[in-house]
View 1 (cartoon, one colour):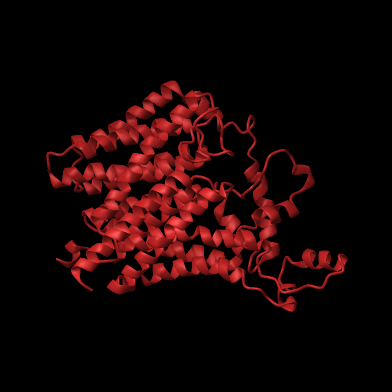
View 2 (tube, rainbow, N blue to C red; view 1 turned 180 degrees about the vertical axis):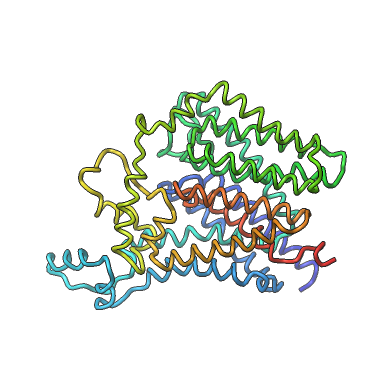
Length: 450
């Protein structure tokens, strides 16, 4: 392939990735409803998926990421396998199908061919929802460090705009500027339907802002704009989380901020902390002090269990029992609502709507069974190995981004234990971008080759 053709292909991939990134943030901030908006994101991902896959195949770069690409393939295979029709004697013998067989018998109907999933339409929608993050993962695997850095800078800018939009939403008294019909009205949501997902987005951006700012100290240049932007961004996140009042966001900020400042210290050259690093730390400290003085009571009120009982904890044992009943293959990706409604105790029925388990690991166990659990374990093994490689390497532009990506992934994985942030296209695409950056920790950098 000629250099000119390769350059044109890179330009096409970069343009397609930028379009997907923008559409995922503007139209992908909800996990349900608004099917047209989500379909636009999925359609926008198709050209990128084809272009990025073609580039990896023709360049041979895919060989460096066989394990990660295998995990991606297995992730896509689970819902597709669940959609394969099975003969009656096979699917009726699977655990959890007893009530379905009884219902057909009472109706005087004979069982026909049926898939593993009990909600084929929702499982198919879940399979389609994998297209945007898969496309972004493949695109970043074949992108340069400079191209990836520009994508991350765009994420930081959108984070600032999202907080500003959230402030305007709050100032409107919860009546205007909300982009989704089903949303946390009266809260700071930004481009998201759920304020908790905006908190996840801000947490995932923190390490990148920190390393971008600290890296200029290692290069010993006169440029200080990234450093001051990083300090202001960290302070803005503190204020934003205080206004959002996401309990998980508040709890996770401390560990994420500490590890991000550690990554910034490594990016600065592992030397004695100078004025630049102190500025980053000072931005966080000043914002925390301001929040403690002005907005601490409303934040503490969110942790008052007596004034706001937590229904998700009461629902987890029910979900766990239901998951056991559907093992080993699960009830089907996207079937949580249907299954939970069939086992929800009558004494717990109330006007609230428990649409997800608010624990992705538990919900995956219910919907995907042991194959889903095995995939999670394999992913965590991959994540641990790549994280160790990234953090034991010396400072460089590539390694700085990889360490930051490991922290961002940790923030999203941790929040997934009490919520469902990755069911939004916006955060799923960001997760895939970070995963591709961290995957490159297993590839030698130009400095390593030298």
